[in-house]
Length: 238
Image (cartoon, rainbow, N blue to C red):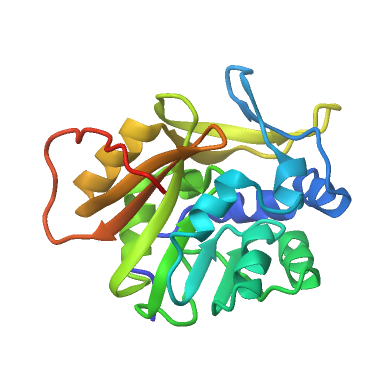
C-alpha cells in the first residue's frame, strides 16, 4: 500500500546515503554535524548511535509492545536490542551503510524511506522515532500522519524530542567537520512541548512523557480528532 502523505524530495534520501554520513557509520565515530544555512552546527551523536543501548534507550525498549518498526534505525542498536528481547522488529533507513550495520548486529532492516510502501502496513504494534527522527522530511505533521497509517489498531508511537524547547523547520547539510559538506535537504526539530503540539494537531493522544539520561520521550496513540490547544507536558514514569 502506498504512503498516504506526499514523499519528501529525493535529495534527502540521496544525502543520507552519501558520505560523510555513511563514512561515520562505517567507522562508528564522528565528528558529524547538521549545518544550517546560517552556519549553526548541530552535533550528531554517532558514537552513541553505534554503541550499545543506554538508560534512555532502555526506557524506550520498556515501552515497546509486540511488533516494532524502527523508523530511521541508523546502525541498529535498538533493532538488535529488541530482537534480543524476542520482539518481531524491522528497522528501515535510507542509508545502505546503516542497514548493513544493523544486519551485522543481528537485526533485520530494509533500505527504505518511511514514505515508501513498507511491509506490514497497519499491522505494527509500536513505531519508533528516536535520535531526532521526528525531523525526517522536514515536516513533523506529515511524518506523524504517515506513521499513524503504519500502526495496527491500538498501536503506539514512541518519539524522542529535542533536548531544548525548539520548533523549527530548516534546510541543513551534513558536515564532517573537516570541510566536506553534503547537499542541502529539509529537516525539522521539535522540543518536548512542540512535539506534543504537532502530535495533538495531527490527532494523536499523549499516553505519557518522560525524561531518561537527559533525553525527552513521548508515547503517543493515534486519535480521531484534532487538537487546538498546546497540551501540557505530562510527567509520568517510563
